[in-house]
Image 1 (tube, rainbow, N blue to C red):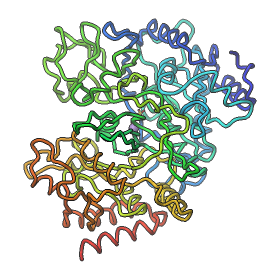
Image 2: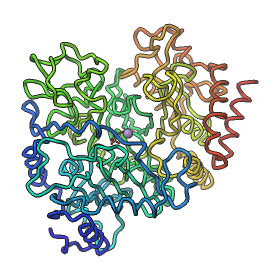
Image 3: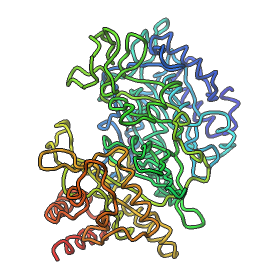
Image 4: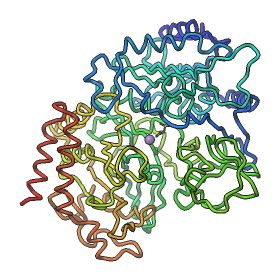
Length: 612
Ligand code: SAT
Ligand code: MN
């Protein structure tokens, strides 16, 4: 298909304008076909950027530039007209100035390359909850990843019609080629981090990205569209775009519920989405592992879709023990980025569950190293980058739920928030009300595990709703949006249809620093308790901080004593008093007068109950 055959006048003009600005050698409208995928890989292999993996059919390894290995949060901008609308947790830039700067950078940026125009749907094509985006990019690596992560092609243009809504997503790796020049094995990007831009214009629902070819900086359907821009769309249109997994859980009586959960990074979100239950007779299946889009149905229930079509998962730490189903999902048709390459032509990473075969291994920087005999990480000597990734089609997951692509979505019974907390926060806690649940989401946080960031080890980094880097507008307004949706449902007499809200913590430690709860598949015990709570089973006690499991309501996993269970499921009054003052003084204070007053009321009410 040619540009002048595009039926949507706005899309056609947008593409033509950018062709004139970026001056690519040629333009291709992507059709999402297998032929197109294979052709992109031929280009990438011959440019020396992709290595076919002997051990995994139709799978390839890429190594990025060392400057281009993760989302560039300091170069991620929320460019709303009013600075106040971006809020204290986002980097704001004036949209007029930012567009001027970036238009200058985009000028001639695709010289010597092909411009790919990727029409994609976030969510099943044609679903009422789905949205269409079109990404312009000069990266065939982006094209193949978008093939896996989204639905690409002509059927999307058919749904878009002549005047449908789409989110325009501009992307360039910022590495034009001179005549005769080729990438020659070197990952093309702008290596100077200060010259990368990941810009969002929430007032006009546009995305402009420049200089990075990696992950969320470049696959613009994911964090940029499905979270930052979608959160603004959801605010404006009355729905929810959340950084949440969606799972289906079936009890021994074959009753089914769906649950959506938000956890900050490094808390095992993908593992939870694909959990293998240890509880007999219970089954967990996956709808999505990262993002949920949710709309209220006429029946008052909240319906969720997974806007994505694949998994873009962190590789290190993924093993048959930690996530069996993820390991099965990546056996074929997968893309690996910044993993190690073994002598026999397979990928390898730290904590993959086994040492590397053979004598040598190629690390993520392309250097030959002795093959590690164990899978333990050696600081500074990592074979795979800590943010090495796999991209795999969701339908390759052995426990993908049959309804994962249902355009209606699945009705959500419960929300789960959580974080990595060594103290204070119980194993599971159900909110007393919707407002209390929003309070729980708003104080979500996780302890800093390594002295990585500028924070004291063990101190809590608040990550409200796990949306800190992903909310496209003022976080105080975002809390208010959640409150408004709950209030509306209650005012309409549909309050009982709202999902129940829970807060979990798998990471409590005892005085000697040992984890008190085994986690992984044993977390099914907590999910089962939540399941029964949704049916109003009498399995709880009312406390100052919320509804906690009654003694014996969660059967202890092997090796966990009754005393430990009782500590995990009780109120740490002193700890909570500290939590309350930390939230009031260090967290809520940041949001000024945009922090909804009812959340302060909630804080005061909990404090009062703790003191009584
Ligand atoms: O690189 S992504 O933004 O897609 C993944 C992540 O950082 O969570
Ligand atoms: Mn994520």
